[in-house]
Image (tube, rainbow, N blue to C red; front, top):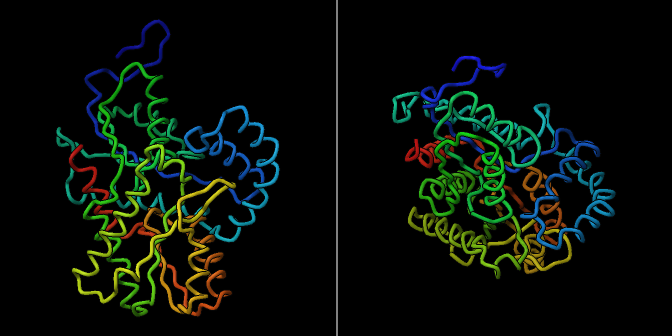
Length: 348
């Protein structure tokens, strides 16, 4: 399209024939500092999908109390897990992006025109932002957009919030791409197989524990009563993992696999049983050996590396437990990358 009346040159309509995959995860502060964490929490906690109480009341609480107290405490926690590569969540997500791009290229998974598919990464909060990444995709001529939020179990505060950000961005565009939004994969066979493989690898190396705890990110119980399927999706993931283990001959009873929920916030009742309470109870009952995995997290982050591997380990050991091992998130494992490829493949 030629330059007209001072307008900058843009892609012509016929040039918009590319397919792009957008991976989205939660996000992270830019640094483990109080100011960076405050900026991140301000964006995160202002999302009406995350906090569903009257807006004015919440903004008073957020700015009057939470953003004055919580950033320093959270920054201290981030400092415990920060690496030379920066935020673990962002570094792992970037590896996932690169490995998925390589997988699509090597397996010649092209679009309907036989062109290579590009893989992009965005964070719901923080950088790289959804708006900025989508603009880059738009400017590159992408006409078919496949969005994969990396939340295995759909929930309104996570998956639906990503959709809100996608929709808010598209509202500003004159020309819209085709849009394919993958909203859940809690029962996807490749996902269950990848979870099983990570658990089996741990069992092979360390033996079968007395209890296997599958800890999912918590949600307010109110969400369940309002129709959010997250709790049911978590329970189904657990059931399918147990069935897979039994089918593959792993000698662990169903009752030895426990579903729990972590990371509760505020005084409201959240999904139960709570992970920390469960671990303490197990130890007090005489359980000495546990393994714990976090199926709701596609990449290790503050909630797994600090809350589970450090805080909850201490809870279990302090109550009398002896052996506590955390099974890492699927991260950039090859079978996890293959799962992503198979999820997006029908929409390329």
